Amino acid sequence: DNPASVKRQLAQLFDLSLRATVPDEPDVVPLIDACAVKGGVKFGDYQCNNAMGIWSKMKGKQTGFRGPPAIGQAIVNNLPPSEMIDSCSVAGPGFVNVVLSKKWIAESLQRMLIDGINSWAPRLPVKRALIDFSSPNIAKEMHVGHLRSTIIGDTLARMLEFSRVECVIRRNHVGDWGTQFGMLITNLFEKFPNPDDVSEADIGDLQAFYKASKVRFDSDPEFKLRAQQAVVRLQSGEIKYRKAWKQICDVSRAEFDKVYQRLGVQLEERGESFYNPYIPGVLEKLDNLGLIEESDGARVIYVEGVDIPLIAVKRDGGYNYFTTDLASLWYRLNEEKLEWIVYVTDIGQQQHFDMLFKAYRRAGWLPKDENAYPKCTHIGFGLVLGEDGKRFRTRSSEVVRLVDLLDEAKRRCKIAILERDTAKDWSEEEIEKTSEAIGYGAVKYADLKINRLTNYTFNFDQMLNDKGNTAVYLLYAHARICSIIRKSGKDIEEVKRNGKIVLDHEDERALGLHLLQFPEVYEEACTYLLPNFLCEYLYNLAEIFTKKFYANCQVYF
Ligand code: ARG
Image 1 (spheres, rainbow, N blue to C red):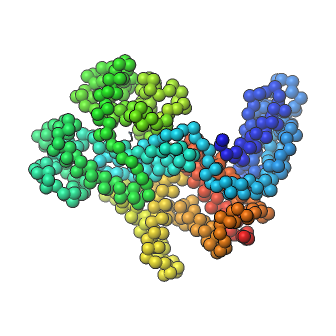
Image 2: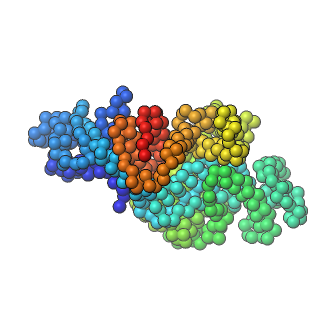
């Protein structure tokens, strides 16, 4: 029972017309699109693009049509009467342009308003979904790539919730089990022979601690040996090693949480270590199915269409990133009974996930049809670049600390707010809150507005520009709308129930039509899991509101 978008409703009408126009071509499905602006003008609100295709399909058959425009005209003539449509015209090679009725737009909008925004979302056929996102690595830096994953993942989780998936788990698959712990723990023991002496402040700067440990690891063979032994002792559960491991994880976690808190993102952590006990069982099952082969001393799995195998167990008997994902996916499907599992990482990991899913298909643990449920999806994204076109780094080519980056966005917003005359009327708290909303919002929106698959250049000036396609611009339009409502002195719920939407002015009509198009844009964003479709919709909405409606129309309550 998905809401009937304008597009869908038109498609139903045109389907009836097509059945009458080409009764012998049951495969012809209506091709309906919103009209684009060409050379500053729009020839209609929607168009039906079937005529050309029908013409080429029917060429050579006796049809009686003289060409695509005649087919277009026949499609118009065969349209059943409808309250939706004001007029139709045929243009160029048979495009049918549709102008919708103002009255119908107003009435549909009124219904949407009364039914509420939640009724606008298409339902997804899933009850339990998990988004695996953010997932930084303990003691290593949480970098801008993790920021992208966090922003995109959180947005996708909100989209699934909006589409009424009953249970959406936001999962932080933190890297808390890598071999890096060997050197970290060994270094920790060297500095603090008695683990009880370690306070969080001592390893507070984990990046520095990581670097120092790495230097020791690379330069001192004896240290390296102890570090390698430490990994084994940790993984076999020795108390002292476990304790040191936990200390390091706790410090890291506190750092990550600062970022999440600022972004308003909530995640449920279940690190790689959690799945360690499940690894042997899953490997055994795969082995019994005959999937595991020996290769050069390693235990590997070959998958369709990829030359190199997936390494399930390394030559030294150790597990890797792949092994953990083999086990975590098993857990997610069988213990957590998830129907849709979405992984959000940079595109660089595409092959990793492709191979993982293929191995699961080979085992018969995921359906052969990629679109069937239970389903796994990898959502990739491009790199974050600096002004110089290279990976985003600080001037001294260090990794940018995310907390610093968010602080900077906020700081710049605060300066802009304080420069305004109105700032003197604001309380300190209002200024703080507003700088955060705009600053953090700007960072999120700048990331979401471009197609996630492309690289994105980080630029504070651009993302904080109040006239461009930015969060500032959207928030400004929103604030204006709120102020209209406030100044009216009316109870908005009462207005919704008893007010009447009239779209007499052409700019009112444009705004009304755009609002009505939300469901179809949202549906597309959901189909491809591309939040940038929503951003574009919102930006156009803010523009129509600000430049047309707000400039030229009056509001009566
Ligand atoms: N920790 C990984 C990284 O920083 C991302 C983990 C993604 N999730 C997964 N299940 N592999 O790149």
